[in-house]
Image (cartoon, rainbow, N blue to C red; front, side, top):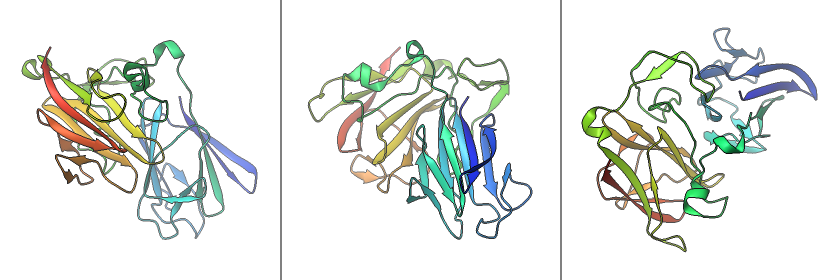
Length: 252
């Protein structure tokens, strides 16, 4: 389970396990992590956790949120990242699963490690309720423990019509043109960390792409999408992190 270590002036104050889908950080008492300091806004930032991945978002704070010295609005946290809130530091530590459990986009496409990655997950549409402004809501029912670390939730399965079709992404540009990846998992993360990252989620009523990191938003069929989850249709052309790819549906 990933966690963050809160410190100030080199003194560790506490360790917080990211065992909730979303935690908030701020000066007001209702926050999951309360920092009683005037430099911290009432609701300063939030962290949404999707299995082993975590997404940080600044909640329009007065003094801003920084990661490794750089101001951010939304940021996909990497192991060892230092989040700065005024004089306070939060170090993100990722509990990496065993290599055998990984299902990387790089392996499937045989591309450089800094190009793209996909998260191995057994939960359906887990991203939608976890990142404010990243995706829309998704219905959940009481369920079982997931091997990836989240417990107590069984996400809705695709209906029979959608289950009969599997989304596929095919690379159109670059040295990997022609290579494909089936989007059979609930959540696939695409892009280049630090430059541009997006997620494609599989829901009961189709596939959706959502911007996660980067100043530029993904482009679909020549038009930049908004911050909201964007539905993908058959043969949509996606431009992300300098790579052009096509989304299409294949009979399951």
